[in-house]
Length: 251
Image 1: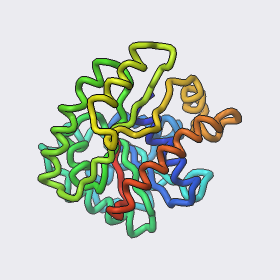
Image 2: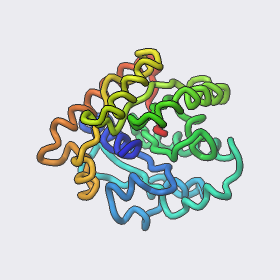
Image 3: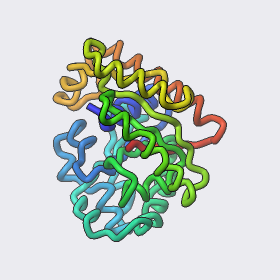
Image 4: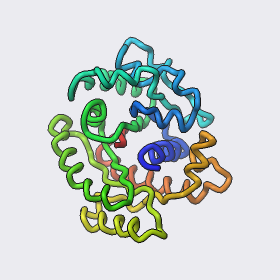
């Protein structure tokens, strides 16, 4: 439970608040699509568009039961990443994709990428307005955060408007001292504004929601978990307002 869980439930929170939201699965593993619809591998998606930008965007958009929430699966062309060229090779097509999303009237395009700052993930970041970093609350991962933030500062040379919203702690296990200690260590390591107050617990609810192809807030007992994502959404909205940004990307 990490970036994909955050992406799905955060997108659902924005959509519940009336924000017309598009969740894009830019992870070649297709985790978002597989979590929400078992047929996602049969659908054209983001990587198919990168391989052939002439594909109409409307063909890629999958509506959900919530009219303000749609998604674009990774698609059948996710092998495109392997032979797609070096850093910067995909930026023009990603920008064309985002321009099409804006033309479709979406207020927010939230992109779930593969981990890392290179390849298509790096090009998505270089084309976006803002980035949020989900980080599992465990000691080894916490130690890598400063290096990741340094890498993001280098990417801002290519994209000066990129806003680094901060780090969101995920999989926080309150009954495990190593997990809570890692969360405390990260908050001590970074400026307060760089770590979101809302943090995502390790909870079987998320596994159950994924098994049913639903955001956690739709479950009968999901109100508390939904509240956490609503709090995270409120923090993001506050950070985005000065920039007028409408697109975020997750690592």
